[in-house]
Length: 155
Image (cartoon, rainbow, N blue to C red; front, side, top):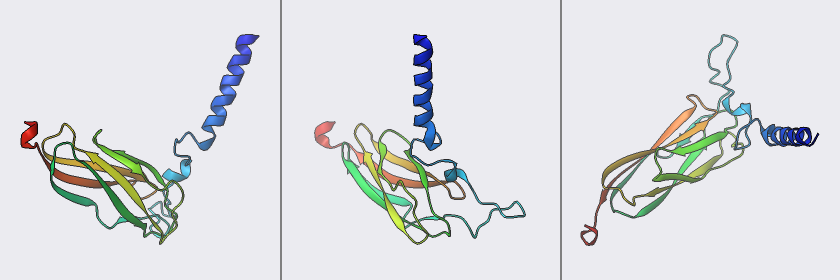
């Protein structure tokens, strides 16, 4: 009887936690719903479009160990609300710090804050941030280019 009660409580807890559609950001399947017209083609008149002021950041030369923070500003230039499902860095040195979690209406914008930590890296580095959203295509890439030099006192 005790094991059955524990099993029921565990299942109830999982159901409550998964009530958001199983997505950690709180967005359900609406994020991946790409509108299709009657002909089975992409309905370009009813889709969110993620437009950035810049998609490539040229950082230039920096000293090993420097931490660079940058805000990538964007606007939803589409005709449907934009939902950002996830923002991921290509490596552990590039971390998305913050981004809007709710619906971004057409014409509205936001900022994706990114941090790049050059600790332990040398030479030319090209790292990226991937934004997954209800856009077509569903992924947008931002790129950071830099060259990391080791200061003489660290050699």
